Image 1 (spheres, one colour):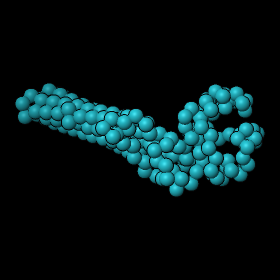
Image 2 (tube, helix red, strand yellow):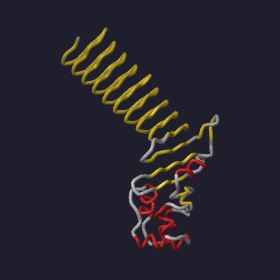
Image 3 (cartoon, one colour):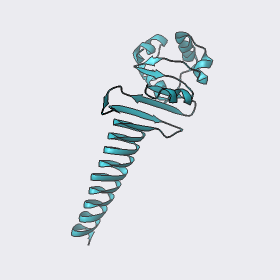
Image 4 (cartoon, helix red, strand yellow):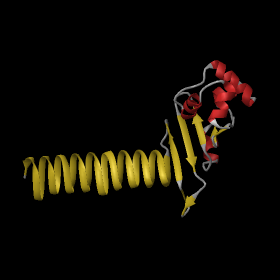
Length: 206
């Protein structure tokens, strides 16, 4: 059932259904009653997390115990509790045995996503997005990769961040062969304070 179909059936907007799926908000009591009647389950089932499947846009939006998630990690699931949630999607399409897309994030636990495109608390992939991101192109709070963008960034080729280390490093503190930043350390450096073995340009240059 699509978000639009469900929204129409119980008299809410598609955006409201989307927020329920992502754990940003929860249904009001009258909507809970409408959901329980639509899916022919008790409100107890919906609130307490007893197995209830409702495929919304190809996703099983299922309040479940953790063991159920572990039994079928290949499927898309939404795990919702009062103060935590977990969403996982793994595409059936693979490349060299690796999912083309793997999304695995949530609160309360560490969730690792591994795929060509990986999005998660910890993401490992060719293109990765996460609090901790590792891969070819990595974006996160802490990231390492060929090209890396993060608060703390390590890039084999290019690193951009508050703290950046890479062949080309751009950041508040930049360390690299080519370093640009507030404090820049490298072979060639440009910054407020620039220290370099070859060329240094900055307010303070050595």
